[in-house]
Length: 428
Image (cartoon, rainbow, N blue to C red; front, side, top):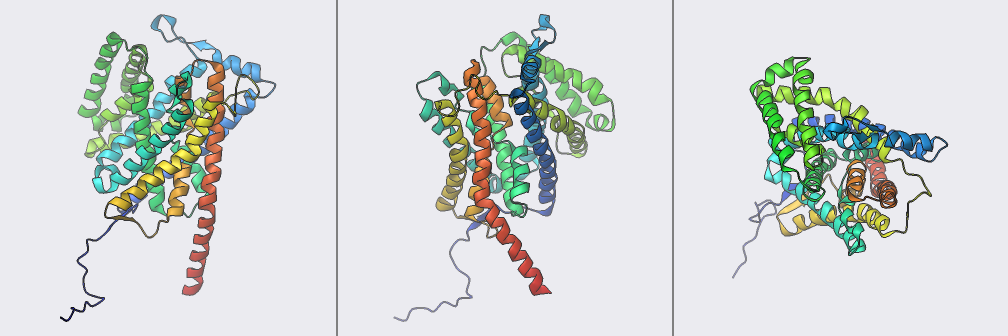
């Protein structure tokens, strides 16, 4: 029996493989580029602030530096007499987490995470990038009190990572930049959940219940008067800010980490509709400089202040080893392996503009876990020796992750530049 001859041009009956890590549209690409530029500036400022803090802690002014960090301020009667370092981590970082919450809601309502097809890869990759580092740390520290720090190597500092990416691989495909941003957004959501669920000690129900009052007032105002609040230059400061501060203070008194209040308040801000979109954009425009120029740099300045040769047991302590291996190896393995499994067991393939080498490099860059990792360090350990060991491990591990990322991305970036130059010459 004669076998039918199929023309090479004939349509195939095989299901078409869905491409992943592709840009959805120009509008979304433009929004991602705008966010990346803001994170680039923020990342550079954080680097400088952290370096200054580390230098101050290891210089002749170290005694004054630590005295400033430990100085207590605030009303004792309200339970808010906190050290300057504590105000930086619990107070100022609430602004940072407010911006994180606003971006999270935008991604889930109007961004890449609103569609399953574009959300599945960064969500799964983020989960893999959290689980594997946590397992590595826990395996090394299992059975010891230090195991409580398992979440330290799970975070990604998007501002720091974006700043490094712009320096080492400026010509990386836009789809990978979007992947890193979306992955980091999901990573932040996981980190927020972990802090709320595992790093909360002794919930006080009365302050927690009372916090619902300012939260409800805040929700009513931003949803009932979004256009008025957006058009007013003073209302957000004189009306919403005191309400937000009240919610933050009650959260702090309840035992839940106070930065979670910033996330909840951000989730209440409408990000769609005419008035909601305008209010979200106004909040982002007005409050991002506070986060980028003040909140995160001040926190980094005090959090990175570790005296080398002090009480730290870095680098051979299991805490340090677990954190560094989690950041340097766990992150890229978890992210790349999860993405590969999606392509292996579903009808999906990488976009032709993206290579596995670049994906591994971006996964390694996600191991830059600076801001949130240092925050979780503060929540994990009570002794100065453990905390200092972990802080040094976070900083060294993040720098090592940058070197690993550069090994995978720099060479490829140069190759892309040669390809572009060849195309220009050919067209001429």
